[in-house]
Image 1 (spheres, one colour):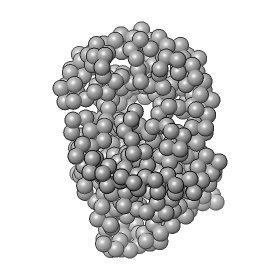
Image 2: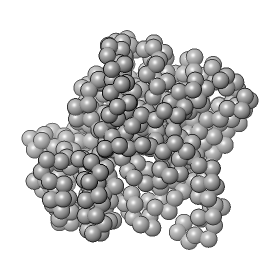
Image 3: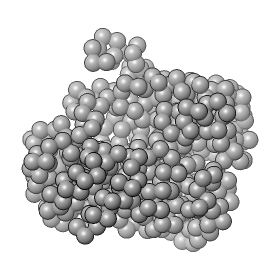
Image 4: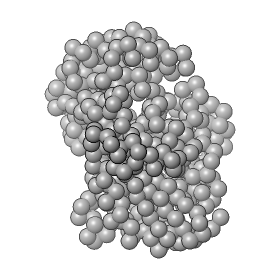
Length: 438
């Protein structure tokens, strides 16, 4: 279906009161209301594209304003012109001579850019009648590379190197597609051990997850060391010695504090410590990585890493052992392609951040592409899964035996149920109109 020209862009502030039951709570974000700046693109042919970026409540209205500020750069553009040289459109959005000042390529304006570009990718995949992952898998290496802005990263990954990686990834591609269709992509769960959950809830959720086939579990830590020791011991006893445990501090510690705190938790054999310190502190992460290596504990980060340039430096500095891409923090698929390819060159596995509102729905497309076309390996690779809010999407994530099953509907799996959007729109939706938790 030919989508024609983009004739309108709308952005809405959609929020869910998850703080009421402490869903999503961690050491830094104690009362998150999972939210999204939700974008709809309409074309003159009637075809629509849907995109979003994830937030945790207050401030979503600022992202919506930033999306609206990008409207003149998007409306009036022809989709075919965009996708023929997608990297040019990416730079068009991120390098406007005045808008760039409020970034560049970071913060609120980049979250807005992600939401808009996610909608463009959804629109493109719908026009081709394919899910986004299949759209990517079917592209020739040259077309994939044409989607990437290589500015600022050629000292780590050149266009020629990217092409070489993607060409090598063509071998055995169909077998990996068939494997994913049968088995799905391995996942781990964060839903059992939010920091605000009481022990009874934690035990019940762990027990249920084990019975459902989950074998990798993440625990939120960082508020109180003695409590972390107690909770990690409880979780390790619940899941047994053979299953995988990860811990996540959500940026709570200083560098030295991170090393000493995780050393105390090392008896529970975590695979990684996630976001141990400021997400911007590349050298701090490098210090932590080096200090924890003798304990067999890696460092994972990326969910609040601003852009491909920061990921480049993390990789160059050996500051992380697990790359956590996010489908809504950086500039959509365009920038994540660059990050996935850099991670492959530096031989660091990609284990995406997900959860939130729609993050699982979106990032599943990226992990399928990474395995099928780039890495060709599942060693030390798994994608986060959080069992919240999927019912608000038209095509929610499907998990079988703790694996993401490939979505088959055209698009980016990003379209929300309209009644849910209306009900949870802030502040006029029914959920929020008389709600005092603002």
